[in-house]
Length: 392
Image (cartoon, rainbow, N blue to C red):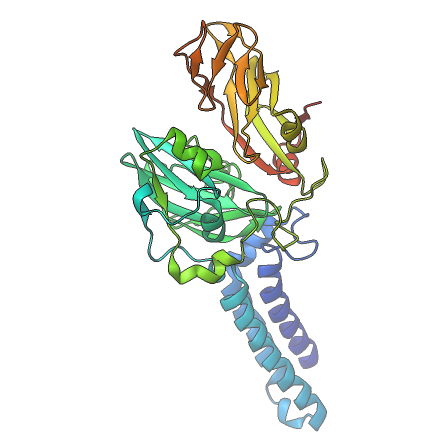
């Protein structure tokens, strides 16, 4: 009986430590199953589980340990040290918030003081007349940066494993909330709010477990493009600078922008419609559609419609900066082409610049309205938009 108690206690100790990190980090097989509720239970009750397991271990040792022979004692001591090692690694090295930290020195500067090269991809946001740009190879390490734009608090997020950039209002039930990175679910980053300890999915701002399950954070429109392209449209923007404390960590993301990074979880598959292929995803009125990045690179313009929303996807000559605009202007569905790197609509024979403003022709002065869209890995878009259609 004592052996059963001892063995049971040790098994529970080892299993609890390993599984609490296995379910919420990208270990083989861990991100494909729907185990988030189990992970949340372990996270919240881990100390109760440890205490129960230790009570079992102690009950199995009382009045028996000193009667053991030499080798059983040695094996137990080795297992005890192994548990301590696993405990340390899991709780101080493998948990997400022990691997990825918020910037200690957050600095946003204007172009005159900027040190970020113009070819770097940024997530750009404009609120209440103020624009800010957040380089992806910086926020990709931090996963989320809380800031204020135009007087409004924002939470700028990025998940490199899904290649998803999203910006949210950090208000929950009317109260400004703080969040910490807790792990991932289906390869997408998860954040825990400080008040209710609910877990929120980065890709859509949904609370997927905890007291607030089902609630959504308000998304704030954002765009992804090269810094040079963002500056062309927003010359007065402020640009987030790298925190020198994390120089090595930023260096580990070198090549992420163009998909040549070494890590298999973040590297692009240059073929189409593979798990790590790039797509542009658009959602409107609960309809979602995915567009192959390779096709956009080839054509540079794709005219399409979904849910009564006529859109045009445009790729700039840097093959990195893309736009998705509503092509309904004055109740006319414009058809766009690129001719000698000039954007034209063949409906009215007007010429447009790559900021979406008509500069010549019957539509002169008109401006195309942006449509929220995202570049991400195909596995991410189809996982979180299971009913998506594919543009062909």
